[in-house]
Length: 550
Image 1 (spheres, rainbow, N blue to C red):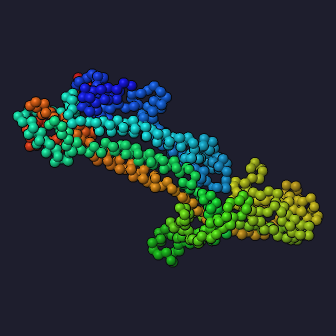
Image 2 (cartoon, rainbow, N blue to C red):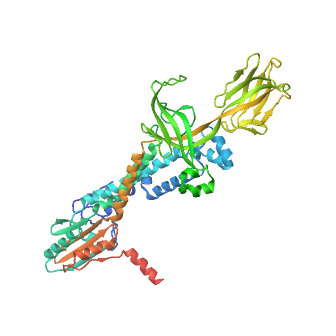
Image 3 (cartoon, rainbow, N blue to C red):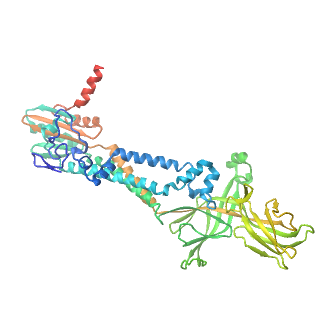
């Protein structure tokens, strides 16, 4: 668009309200009594000047403060919805998410899952919202910050008469010696911490210009903060996963790409006892009982590192790194990873033993021991006696009369056995659960009798790695710097100009007019120049007059 050249020689962009250099209002400004709009120093903003191409429309959309507020509001509401039920990462890892939400929370849980709120913070549309906020902040900052910077950089000391008259603080005084009075004013403003620029006997006193950039520093901090939050969903940048590991087990540590393994040597649980805990825990022990308050629970673990290449199906070649005792608030830390002790489960079923017996005679033809986490399909008892596991239900329940399992954790194990003997070469079928023995084919000749059980403890650890924390912290720190910068300082300017035997004074600040007036009062104390007064906007005057009439 056509640029506007002011009579002072400065070339302004189309849409500029008043000249960036001398302050003369443009031809578009018709009212001479209305106070000047000093936002962005009257400079043209791209969003208010161009609206033709698709790029212009996208720019104008994201530069709107209303759009930015709505994006933040929608994101906050969506984030709140994600906290109604636990995210998928916090549900038991051995259950299906689709079944868990419906079973635990009913129809609302099913809707929650179907809408994708179970994985809200890593969903594409949530990430798009966060990215849109960042784009809005960047465009809004450029749309306003660049014109503001250019205008403040181009401002001259000597300003147009109409610019001075249309400032909120303005006054004129006839004096005998303008040069002497302006010199006194200059000294007074210097004593108040103002930087002085002079031109042709006129002065521009200015201080705290840096405070104008407070909002843009806020935006920069928020952008860095959002980038850090988005990086959490890039592989290798952030890990926050639960590892349930049983005593004696060796498992790969989640999020390490198969590089590190952990072995649970033993889980230790220690309780407070009245005889040893002292008086400090007496109140708690009175309330919940002796031996019911944990003083320590820890996992004695060995950390291994894989030293061979990953080959599908091949066992890993592991090298011991070190032994650790993982306690609450004393995590295992190694190579940017940390494993925290957060939970435990005592006496989980490990193995169950059964005897194959003749129901009529009670004779025992052998014992089988089943590993509940990795059962075999068949158990040979020799002499023609054999037991097969036709079905295994780790967490047994009857679903409309049919056996099913709630999870893969052996909380309530049940088996469908097929028993082969010399008398029953075709096999007999029996469903055996805790305190249940169901024979679907009628009366069997043989039965599986419970012979014993072994348990073991399970340790619950959280695996964490966070490369984004420094970025998020940096963004937060920059944001707070911007808040302080814009809150506790304000940009103040005083123009003092000579007009023949008169001294004209105009002043402006982006906020805290009382502080500006206080500076002027003290700076003009030893001069004969009258203090400038605050002018009301003509629109405000009209409103006040209408209110008075009403």
